Length: 198
Image 1 (spheres, rainbow, N blue to C red):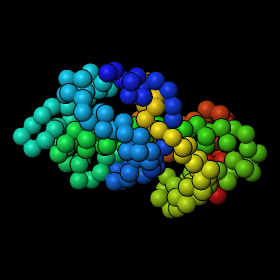
Image 2: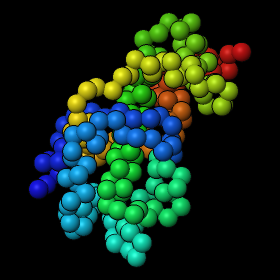
Image 3: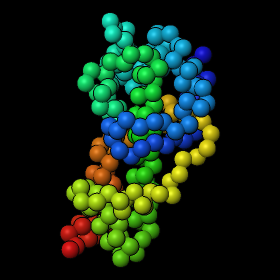
Image 4: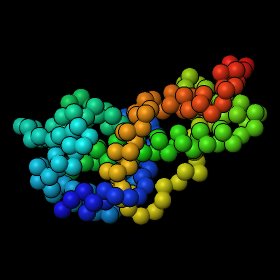
């Protein structure tokens, strides 16, 4: 069994925008592929994880992930990156994959919408982004993304290829809002002026 047998070639993903929250992964358990991953021997698991600089090793109290910063995992897991079972590791890993994937999709959607807006529309979007970045109000940004509904079916398709592409992007895994601001500067020479607009 290889990565492509487990959905490593094409597809889409969706999960929570909130980093570090203990969220479920929609569509993950229903397709049964999580169980397939959980049955793999440790050597094969590490072959799958190797391109991302991550490895899993057995320790006294479970399994420990090495080389992974634990981004987007639940607070109880973040202390040691030790998991009771391989299944729990995979659940956390795919939560990470889905979150990173969705953030990139949202960054691209926001940038595209901004580029197509009028000056007044750009001001509205900047206000939404500013409120989010400054911690004033994130409901505007959430409303903007309301139409990004997860597709039906198995969301484990394509995860490996998609994650590899994301990690190769120049902006990598920089903070969500910071990447959007950087992108808007590229598409709009007046961004700084609009950003300072009262």
